Length: 287
Picture (cartoon, rainbow, N blue to C red):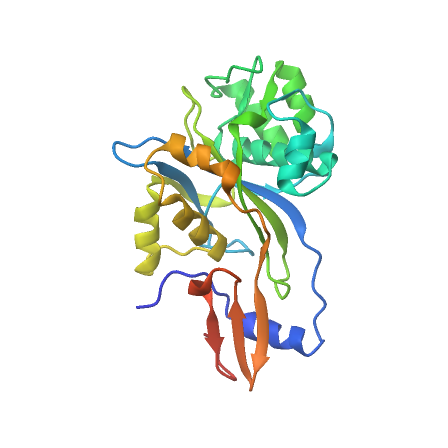
């Protein structure tokens, strides 16, 4: 039975074009996404959304809240948690880029799920983000009418970078027209806050245990991209949310980039260190 690996039918032709020098890779855009966790009766659960089938990128696939880094995410913000120097070393970028990536993770989580990792002070977290005024600000962020730094200043909030743990980094394959250099983070749903489907890009959201999501993927019932599957599998060893968060510091952030080659007319697509995603497409085939 085929699993639910997202695999666009145009990939083989694009891979062959890349191998023949007929396709120039698009530069990847920096992005951030968050595996939002909460305690379940027995095991942790993760918040996931299903991208609308009409979306140009990964339509119908289950993913986490996240998106591209906005240039304004690098603007100075009220900051709590590890210093920018510490974050820069952890993420493998300069300090300005580190702030932009972390800000994007927090901003996108708020835009797409209504959950905000910020507080009035460096050791508190906002307890409720519902209501018309909050929604107006969220929409202004989505529409890029409001910068995240201005949003935090307006409400007297401090970004809680210490509530995030860097978990993984994946780069979209070179043959894809839309490419992202994405940092994956883990975070715990703050007490008093709740998720909702606030994204125009998703048609449903779920709280699901990683093992249940993986089982659905393995049965071919849940469509997912390789980074989503890999990060779900990496959560399986942890029996509590606290264990998962504590494990973030030891996660390998070496970028994972797919490799594609053509051998005797057959396209071979692989992700280093993740053999389960390897694809062999015969000459003229699409799967």
